[in-house]
Image 1 (cartoon, rainbow, N blue to C red):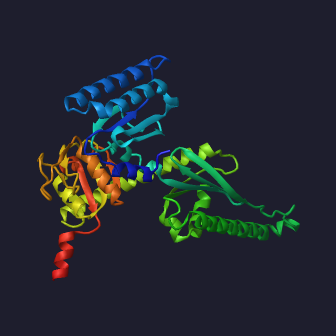
Image 2: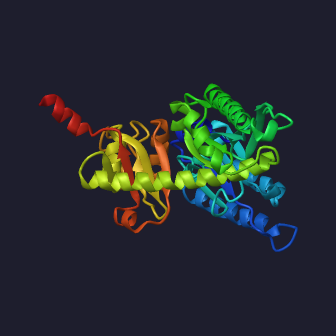
Image 3: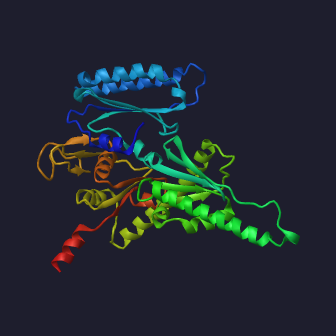
Amino acid sequence: MITRDIIRELADFQTPEGDAITFYFQPNTPQNKSHRQETILVKDLVKEAMRRAERVGKNGPVRADLMRIQDLSEKLRGNQGKAKAVFACAGKEFWREFDLPVKAFSSTSLQINSRFHLRPLAGLNESLQKTCACVADRNRARFFELEGERIVEHEGLAGELSRPRTDGFDGYDAGHVERRVDHEANNHLKRVAERLLERYGTEKCDNVVIGCRDEMWPMLERQLHPYVKQQLAGHFVLDPATSSPDDVRQHAIKVLQQHHEKHHNELLSEVLDEARANNNGALGLRRVLRSMELGEVQALLLGAGFYAEGVECPNCGHIDMRMVHNCAVCGQKTHDIDDISDALIGRALRGRAEVIQIPANPQFEKAGNIGALLRFRAERSVGERLA
Protein backbone atom coordinates (compact mmCIF):
# COMPACT_ATOMS: atom_id res chain seq x y z
CA MET A 1 0.00 0.00 0.00
CA ILE A 2 1.33 3.42 -0.93
CA THR A 3 1.64 5.99 1.86
CA ARG A 4 2.67 9.63 2.11
CA ASP A 5 6.10 8.55 3.40
CA ILE A 6 6.57 6.41 0.29
CA ILE A 7 5.57 9.36 -1.92
CA ARG A 8 8.23 11.45 -0.14
CA GLU A 9 10.78 8.68 -0.76
CA LEU A 10 9.89 8.69 -4.46
CA ALA A 11 10.18 12.49 -4.48
CA ASP A 12 13.75 12.22 -3.17
CA PHE A 13 14.76 9.91 -6.03
CA GLN A 14 16.84 11.44 -8.83
CA THR A 15 19.11 9.97 -11.51
CA PRO A 16 21.43 12.10 -13.65
CA GLU A 17 21.26 9.41 -16.37
CA GLY A 18 17.57 10.23 -16.89
CA ASP A 19 16.47 6.57 -16.73
CA ALA A 20 13.76 6.85 -14.06
CA ILE A 21 10.61 5.16 -15.41
CA THR A 22 7.08 5.96 -14.20
CA PHE A 23 4.21 3.73 -15.32
CA TYR A 24 0.58 4.38 -14.40
CA PHE A 25 -2.04 1.79 -15.34
CA GLN A 26 -5.69 2.87 -15.25
CA PRO A 27 -8.13 0.01 -16.02
CA ASN A 28 -11.06 0.97 -18.21
CA THR A 29 -14.35 -0.73 -19.00
CA PRO A 30 -13.31 -3.28 -21.65
CA GLN A 31 -15.23 -4.05 -24.83
CA ASN A 32 -14.76 -7.76 -24.07
CA LYS A 33 -13.59 -9.89 -21.15
CA SER A 34 -10.15 -10.51 -22.63
CA HIS A 35 -8.98 -6.96 -21.77
CA ARG A 36 -6.78 -7.09 -24.90
CA GLN A 37 -7.13 -3.34 -25.44
CA GLU A 38 -5.31 -2.64 -22.18
CA THR A 39 -2.44 -4.97 -23.12
CA ILE A 40 -2.13 -3.48 -26.62
CA LEU A 41 -2.06 0.06 -25.20
CA VAL A 42 0.79 -0.80 -22.80
CA LYS A 43 2.77 -2.50 -25.61
CA ASP A 44 2.40 0.62 -27.76
CA LEU A 45 3.57 2.83 -24.88
CA VAL A 46 6.59 0.57 -24.30
CA LYS A 47 7.55 0.60 -28.01
CA GLU A 48 7.32 4.40 -28.14
CA ALA A 49 9.40 4.71 -24.94
CA MET A 50 12.07 2.42 -26.41
CA ARG A 51 12.24 4.55 -29.58
CA ARG A 52 12.66 7.72 -27.52
CA ALA A 53 15.32 6.05 -25.37
CA GLU A 54 17.23 4.94 -28.49
CA ARG A 55 17.22 8.47 -29.91
CA VAL A 56 18.96 9.83 -26.78
CA GLY A 57 21.23 6.83 -26.26
CA LYS A 58 19.49 5.40 -23.16
CA ASN A 59 18.22 2.17 -24.61
CA GLY A 60 20.52 -0.06 -22.54
CA PRO A 61 19.62 1.12 -19.01
CA VAL A 62 15.87 1.27 -19.57
CA ARG A 63 15.20 -1.68 -21.89
CA ALA A 64 15.09 -4.28 -19.08
CA ASP A 65 12.63 -2.22 -17.04
CA LEU A 66 10.41 -1.55 -20.07
CA MET A 67 10.27 -5.25 -20.93
CA ARG A 68 9.42 -6.05 -17.32
CA ILE A 69 6.56 -3.52 -17.45
CA GLN A 70 5.32 -5.08 -20.68
CA ASP A 71 5.35 -8.53 -19.08
CA LEU A 72 3.51 -7.10 -16.08
CA SER A 73 0.79 -5.68 -18.33
CA GLU A 74 -0.07 -9.22 -19.47
CA LYS A 75 -0.98 -10.07 -15.87
CA LEU A 76 -2.89 -6.85 -15.15
CA ARG A 77 -5.86 -7.30 -17.55
CA GLY A 78 -8.42 -5.49 -15.48
CA ASN A 79 -6.39 -5.82 -12.26
CA GLN A 80 -9.59 -6.47 -10.26
CA GLY A 81 -10.66 -2.90 -11.00
CA LYS A 82 -7.55 -1.37 -9.33
CA ALA A 83 -5.07 1.09 -10.78
CA LYS A 84 -1.37 0.25 -10.74
CA ALA A 85 1.72 2.45 -10.36
CA VAL A 86 5.28 1.29 -11.09
CA PHE A 87 8.48 3.25 -10.40
CA ALA A 88 11.67 1.74 -11.79
CA CYS A 89 15.33 2.55 -12.43
CA ALA A 90 17.53 -0.38 -13.48
CA GLY A 91 20.69 1.73 -13.12
CA LYS A 92 20.03 2.04 -9.38
CA GLU A 93 18.32 -1.37 -9.00
CA PHE A 94 15.08 0.37 -8.02
CA TRP A 95 11.64 -1.18 -8.56
CA ARG A 96 8.43 -0.35 -6.69
CA GLU A 97 4.88 -1.23 -7.68
CA PHE A 98 1.62 -0.35 -5.94
CA ASP A 99 -2.09 -1.10 -6.34
CA LEU A 100 -4.16 2.07 -6.04
CA PRO A 101 -7.89 2.87 -5.96
CA VAL A 102 -9.71 2.78 -9.29
CA LYS A 103 -9.94 6.18 -11.03
CA ALA A 104 -6.69 7.19 -9.35
CA PHE A 105 -5.43 8.57 -12.69
CA SER A 106 -7.09 9.89 -15.82
CA SER A 107 -5.36 7.41 -18.15
CA THR A 108 -2.58 4.84 -18.57
CA SER A 109 0.81 6.52 -19.16
CA LEU A 110 4.54 5.78 -19.31
CA GLN A 111 7.32 8.35 -18.82
CA ILE A 112 11.13 8.30 -18.65
CA ASN A 113 12.98 11.17 -16.99
CA SER A 114 15.51 12.06 -14.32
CA ARG A 115 12.71 12.10 -11.70
CA PHE A 116 9.59 10.02 -11.18
CA HIS A 117 6.37 11.60 -12.47
CA LEU A 118 4.52 12.22 -9.19
CA ARG A 119 1.86 14.73 -10.16
CA PRO A 120 -0.90 12.06 -10.46
CA LEU A 121 -0.08 10.94 -6.90
CA ALA A 122 -0.34 14.48 -5.53
CA GLY A 123 -4.10 14.27 -5.95
CA LEU A 124 -4.14 11.08 -3.88
CA ASN A 125 -2.41 12.66 -0.89
CA GLU A 126 -5.65 13.46 0.95
CA SER A 127 -7.18 10.05 0.23
CA LEU A 128 -4.13 8.46 1.88
CA GLN A 129 -4.69 10.31 5.15
CA LYS A 130 -5.72 8.36 8.24
CA THR A 131 -9.33 9.12 9.13
CA CYS A 132 -10.95 8.13 12.40
CA ALA A 133 -14.71 7.57 12.43
CA CYS A 134 -17.10 7.16 15.34
CA VAL A 135 -20.78 6.16 15.07
CA ALA A 136 -22.78 6.69 18.27
CA ASP A 137 -26.26 6.76 19.75
CA ARG A 138 -27.47 7.27 23.35
CA ASN A 139 -25.98 4.02 24.68
CA ARG A 140 -23.65 2.63 22.02
CA ALA A 141 -20.53 3.78 20.10
CA ARG A 142 -18.39 2.11 17.43
CA PHE A 143 -14.92 3.28 16.39
CA PHE A 144 -13.20 2.83 13.00
CA GLU A 145 -9.97 3.80 11.25
CA LEU A 146 -9.91 4.44 7.48
CA GLU A 147 -6.80 4.68 5.33
CA GLY A 148 -7.30 4.66 1.57
CA GLU A 149 -9.99 2.05 0.91
CA ARG A 150 -9.15 0.03 4.04
CA ILE A 151 -11.40 0.27 7.11
CA VAL A 152 -10.73 -1.39 10.47
CA GLU A 153 -13.16 -1.50 13.40
CA HIS A 154 -11.84 -1.21 16.97
CA GLU A 155 -13.40 -1.99 20.34
CA GLY A 156 -16.53 0.05 20.97
CA LEU A 157 -18.57 1.22 23.96
CA ALA A 158 -21.95 -0.18 25.01
CA GLY A 159 -24.27 0.46 27.93
CA GLU A 160 -27.89 -0.01 28.97
CA LEU A 161 -30.24 2.87 29.69
CA SER A 162 -32.26 2.16 32.83
CA ARG A 163 -35.99 1.82 32.20
CA PRO A 164 -38.50 0.93 34.95
CA ARG A 165 -41.44 -1.26 33.98
CA THR A 166 -43.97 1.51 34.72
CA ASP A 167 -44.04 5.28 35.13
CA GLY A 168 -45.49 5.00 38.65
CA PHE A 169 -48.97 5.82 39.86
CA ASP A 170 -50.76 8.02 37.32
CA GLY A 171 -47.42 8.64 35.51
CA TYR A 172 -45.97 10.41 38.57
CA ASP A 173 -42.42 9.03 38.03
CA ALA A 174 -42.28 9.62 34.26
CA GLY A 175 -40.39 12.94 34.54
CA HIS A 176 -37.81 11.46 36.95
CA VAL A 177 -37.25 8.50 34.66
CA GLU A 178 -36.75 10.71 31.61
CA ARG A 179 -34.24 12.91 33.44
CA ARG A 180 -32.34 9.84 34.65
CA VAL A 181 -32.22 8.42 31.12
CA ASP A 182 -30.97 11.77 29.76
CA HIS A 183 -28.31 11.88 32.48
CA GLU A 184 -27.12 8.37 31.63
CA ALA A 185 -27.05 9.20 27.92
CA ASN A 186 -25.05 12.36 28.64
CA ASN A 187 -22.52 10.36 30.69
CA HIS A 188 -22.25 7.90 27.81
CA LEU A 189 -21.48 10.72 25.36
CA LYS A 190 -18.81 11.99 27.76
CA ARG A 191 -17.16 8.56 27.64
CA VAL A 192 -17.37 8.63 23.83
CA ALA A 193 -15.65 12.03 23.77
CA GLU A 194 -12.97 10.75 26.17
CA ARG A 195 -12.32 7.72 23.97
CA LEU A 196 -12.05 9.97 20.89
CA LEU A 197 -9.46 12.11 22.67
CA GLU A 198 -7.56 9.10 23.98
CA ARG A 199 -7.44 7.28 20.63
CA TYR A 200 -7.56 10.04 18.03
CA GLY A 201 -6.61 13.35 19.64
CA THR A 202 -3.24 15.15 19.46
CA GLU A 203 -2.62 14.40 15.75
CA LYS A 204 -2.95 10.60 15.99
CA CYS A 205 -5.37 10.93 13.07
CA ASP A 206 -5.48 13.40 10.18
CA ASN A 207 -9.28 13.67 10.23
CA VAL A 208 -12.17 12.75 12.53
CA VAL A 209 -15.73 12.14 11.30
CA ILE A 210 -18.73 11.30 13.50
CA GLY A 211 -22.03 9.63 12.72
CA CYS A 212 -25.15 10.05 14.87
CA ARG A 213 -28.75 11.26 14.69
CA ASP A 214 -29.21 14.98 14.04
CA GLU A 215 -30.83 15.64 17.44
CA MET A 216 -27.86 14.01 19.19
CA TRP A 217 -25.14 15.95 17.38
CA PRO A 218 -25.29 19.18 19.51
CA MET A 219 -25.04 17.08 22.72
CA LEU A 220 -22.03 15.13 21.43
CA GLU A 221 -20.30 18.14 19.88
CA ARG A 222 -20.36 19.95 23.25
CA GLN A 223 -18.43 17.08 24.84
CA LEU A 224 -15.60 17.01 22.25
CA HIS A 225 -12.16 18.11 23.37
CA PRO A 226 -10.61 21.06 21.42
CA TYR A 227 -7.89 18.71 20.06
CA VAL A 228 -10.57 16.49 18.51
CA LYS A 229 -12.51 19.49 17.19
CA GLN A 230 -9.37 20.69 15.38
CA GLN A 231 -9.37 17.46 13.36
CA LEU A 232 -13.15 17.22 12.92
CA ALA A 233 -14.03 17.07 9.21
CA GLY A 234 -17.79 16.81 9.72
CA HIS A 235 -20.63 14.53 10.78
CA PHE A 236 -23.27 12.35 9.12
CA VAL A 237 -26.47 10.51 10.08
CA LEU A 238 -26.09 6.77 10.69
CA ASP A 239 -27.39 4.19 13.18
CA PRO A 240 -24.58 2.21 14.88
CA ALA A 241 -26.89 -0.73 15.52
CA THR A 242 -27.65 -1.43 11.87
CA SER A 243 -24.72 0.04 9.91
CA SER A 244 -21.93 -2.07 8.41
CA PRO A 245 -18.26 -0.99 8.15
CA ASP A 246 -18.83 -0.36 4.43
CA ASP A 247 -21.76 1.97 5.28
CA VAL A 248 -19.47 3.90 7.61
CA ARG A 249 -16.73 4.07 4.95
CA GLN A 250 -19.09 5.40 2.27
CA HIS A 251 -20.56 8.08 4.54
CA ALA A 252 -17.11 9.07 5.82
CA ILE A 253 -15.68 9.40 2.29
CA LYS A 254 -18.58 11.66 1.27
CA VAL A 255 -17.99 13.92 4.31
CA LEU A 256 -14.23 14.00 3.62
CA GLN A 257 -14.76 14.96 -0.04
CA GLN A 258 -16.93 17.89 1.01
CA HIS A 259 -14.41 18.88 3.68
CA HIS A 260 -11.46 18.78 1.25
CA GLU A 261 -13.36 20.70 -1.42
CA LYS A 262 -14.18 23.43 1.09
CA HIS A 263 -10.54 23.49 2.25
CA HIS A 264 -9.28 23.83 -1.34
CA ASN A 265 -11.67 26.72 -2.10
CA GLU A 266 -10.70 28.54 1.10
CA LEU A 267 -7.00 27.97 0.44
CA LEU A 268 -7.24 29.25 -3.14
CA SER A 269 -9.14 32.36 -2.01
CA GLU A 270 -6.53 32.98 0.68
CA VAL A 271 -3.64 32.66 -1.79
CA LEU A 272 -5.31 35.02 -4.29
CA ASP A 273 -6.04 37.61 -1.58
CA GLU A 274 -2.59 37.34 0.01
CA ALA A 275 -0.83 37.64 -3.35
CA ARG A 276 -2.86 40.74 -4.33
CA ALA A 277 -1.96 42.34 -1.00
CA ASN A 278 1.71 41.37 -1.47
CA ASN A 279 1.60 39.36 1.74
CA ASN A 280 1.93 35.58 2.26
CA GLY A 281 0.82 34.50 -1.19
CA ALA A 282 2.64 33.82 -4.47
CA LEU A 283 1.17 33.47 -7.97
CA GLY A 284 2.85 32.48 -11.23
CA LEU A 285 5.69 30.06 -11.88
CA ARG A 286 8.54 32.54 -11.48
CA ARG A 287 7.33 33.78 -8.09
CA VAL A 288 6.56 30.24 -6.82
CA LEU A 289 10.02 28.99 -7.87
CA ARG A 290 11.64 31.82 -5.94
CA SER A 291 9.53 31.16 -2.84
CA MET A 292 10.27 27.43 -3.07
CA GLU A 293 14.03 28.01 -3.05
CA LEU A 294 13.74 30.38 -0.08
CA GLY A 295 11.81 27.76 1.91
CA GLU A 296 8.75 30.01 2.21
CA VAL A 297 6.12 27.60 0.84
CA GLN A 298 3.54 26.14 3.20
CA ALA A 299 1.16 24.84 0.50
CA LEU A 300 1.74 24.42 -3.24
CA LEU A 301 -1.34 24.82 -5.49
CA LEU A 302 -1.32 23.34 -8.99
CA GLY A 303 -4.17 23.97 -11.42
CA ALA A 304 -5.57 21.26 -13.66
CA GLY A 305 -4.09 22.89 -16.78
CA PHE A 306 -0.61 23.66 -15.45
CA TYR A 307 2.31 22.48 -17.57
CA ALA A 308 5.80 23.87 -18.06
CA GLU A 309 9.18 22.58 -19.17
CA GLY A 310 12.35 23.55 -17.38
CA VAL A 311 15.78 22.46 -16.16
CA GLU A 312 17.13 21.29 -12.83
CA CYS A 313 20.65 21.31 -11.48
CA PRO A 314 21.69 17.87 -10.13
CA ASN A 315 24.38 19.54 -8.01
CA CYS A 316 22.52 22.23 -6.03
CA GLY A 317 18.89 21.42 -6.94
CA HIS A 318 18.17 24.83 -8.50
CA ILE A 319 15.07 24.73 -10.75
CA ASP A 320 14.89 27.14 -13.68
CA MET A 321 12.04 27.80 -16.10
CA ARG A 322 14.59 28.94 -18.69
CA MET A 323 16.09 26.18 -20.83
CA VAL A 324 19.71 26.97 -19.89
CA HIS A 325 22.61 24.52 -20.13
CA ASN A 326 24.38 25.66 -16.97
CA CYS A 327 22.98 26.37 -13.51
CA ALA A 328 22.57 30.06 -12.71
CA VAL A 329 23.56 29.38 -9.08
CA CYS A 330 26.53 26.99 -9.18
CA GLY A 331 27.43 26.85 -12.88
CA GLN A 332 27.11 23.04 -13.15
CA LYS A 333 25.48 21.37 -16.17
CA THR A 334 21.68 21.11 -15.88
CA HIS A 335 19.33 18.44 -17.18
CA ASP A 336 15.98 19.01 -18.87
CA ILE A 337 12.66 18.37 -17.10
CA ASP A 338 9.67 17.46 -19.26
CA ASP A 339 7.22 18.65 -16.59
CA ILE A 340 8.54 21.10 -14.02
CA SER A 341 5.67 20.23 -11.67
CA ASP A 342 7.44 16.94 -10.77
CA ALA A 343 10.47 18.81 -9.45
CA LEU A 344 8.22 21.30 -7.63
CA ILE A 345 6.14 18.55 -6.01
CA GLY A 346 9.29 16.74 -4.95
CA ARG A 347 10.72 19.84 -3.32
CA ALA A 348 7.40 20.68 -1.66
CA LEU A 349 7.07 17.18 -0.18
CA ARG A 350 10.66 17.20 1.06
CA GLY A 351 9.93 20.52 2.74
CA ARG A 352 6.77 19.07 4.38
CA ALA A 353 4.58 21.45 2.37
CA GLU A 354 1.04 20.53 1.39
CA VAL A 355 0.40 19.84 -2.32
CA ILE A 356 -3.10 20.68 -3.56
CA GLN A 357 -4.60 19.96 -6.98
CA ILE A 358 -7.02 22.75 -7.96
CA PRO A 359 -9.76 21.99 -10.55
CA ALA A 360 -10.35 24.41 -13.44
CA ASN A 361 -10.77 27.93 -12.07
CA PRO A 362 -10.81 31.08 -14.30
CA GLN A 363 -9.10 33.31 -11.71
CA PHE A 364 -6.35 30.75 -11.11
CA GLU A 365 -5.89 30.19 -14.85
CA LYS A 366 -5.17 33.92 -15.33
CA ALA A 367 -2.44 33.61 -12.68
CA GLY A 368 -0.76 30.75 -14.53
CA ASN A 369 -2.47 27.82 -12.79
CA ILE A 370 0.19 27.77 -10.08
CA GLY A 371 0.40 29.45 -6.68
CA ALA A 372 1.56 29.00 -3.12
CA LEU A 373 0.56 29.94 0.40
CA LEU A 374 3.68 31.11 2.23
CA ARG A 375 4.80 30.53 5.81
CA PHE A 376 6.62 33.88 5.74
CA ARG A 377 8.14 36.40 3.33
CA ALA A 378 11.92 36.18 3.49
CA GLU A 379 12.63 39.71 2.24
CA ARG A 380 10.08 41.14 4.69
CA SER A 381 11.66 39.24 7.59
CA VAL A 382 15.10 40.59 6.65
CA GLY A 383 13.72 44.11 6.32
CA GLU A 384 12.06 43.91 9.73
CA ARG A 385 15.29 42.68 11.33
CA LEU A 386 17.26 45.51 9.69
CA ALA A 387 14.66 48.05 10.84
